[in-house]
Image (tube, rainbow over all chains, first blue to last red; front, side):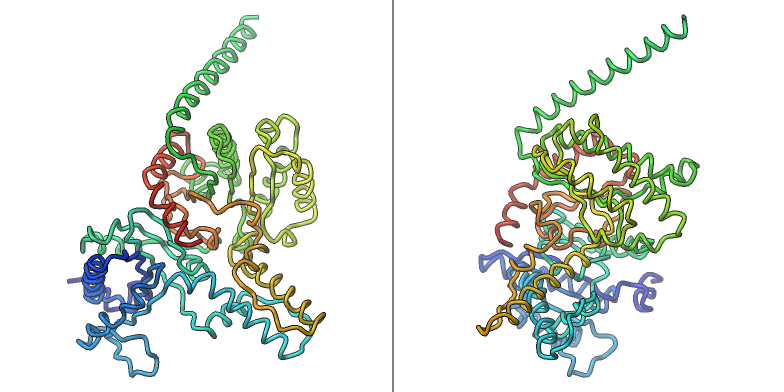
Length: 198
Length: 278
């Protein structure tokens, strides 16, 4: 199919963020995790190269093992940069609320320490300085597209520094997710023209 | 004589139409107040240039039409007793546009700031306090001085707040807050021998330009675009993000009502999200 060929050629977003708040009850966790795995399979089939999974509480982070066992089937990498990466594999990242504002506070402490330890003259920090500080404490690149699988369109506290120009699309609750809606959203994304304020 | 009479009749018709419009709006507000009214609404006013192109208007005409739409939106919000309204008037990124366009947009902003300070303007009618939010040092002296005069002139107004984001991006705001928090720690470190203070989220938040308002309940963007374009990123964690297909100069009363109804539908979920993040 032509569309399938385009995704493999790299016309698709490099980084895709899924926003899902997994509920507390065990059975809901299991159900939601299965849904997330289905979603990852669809994204892998479409050819998305990198996915960031976000939930405010960090339940998905804690449930990495479940996804890990699926990793072994060879479809995904676990984000460990020491592993040899097959170009066909999808890179996976897990993010929670603590990677947002708290990370900025950590980056601020990192910058202060660098300044004080270097005993330099008073310095005016720049945006690249803060970006580098965030990278130093584990920050990753900005997602191009955010798919929100929640009752309302809300970014749920996803790290603010990373969504400056991210397209944010509401997909409805995870339990009602449809492959057709996913394809439509990604297709619409490819036709968006950004002028970045110009 | 006949012409004067016709003009008088037209004026009377317009006044009657305005009074009827106002009465109908009050009826709608009465119904809406059964549910929750947002405390803070933010607008990304996108589509002025596309509007001008769509209607074959001259340079700057889109922004002028956008200003009229803004005045209407502010009136509706304050009539509905939304206490805080924030608008994205000019981004730091917008300085990258063609110099003539930047100059004409900033000139229009300057004119409108001067109008806002006047006694009969919407600002004094609704008791609105104005804040200019952003890196104001990037603005020319005349505009910055007008902005400072507007803030001073409205400092005693207390019924509502209008935050005008100009020379603003969220990343610049966050960076500025981080800078000020770091400078506090450095000053403390230089003045005493106790252990180094650790910066936490509250230390950064108190230095944000938008610390003068609660986080927005709703962020509305026009023209069908789905991104925040570096606007209120820090504050938007539990905001309802709403995209309207209408271009900014086309936005009207019914659009606002539709957004409020959607907000009320999701109010419980949004409040829960806010609690989880606090």
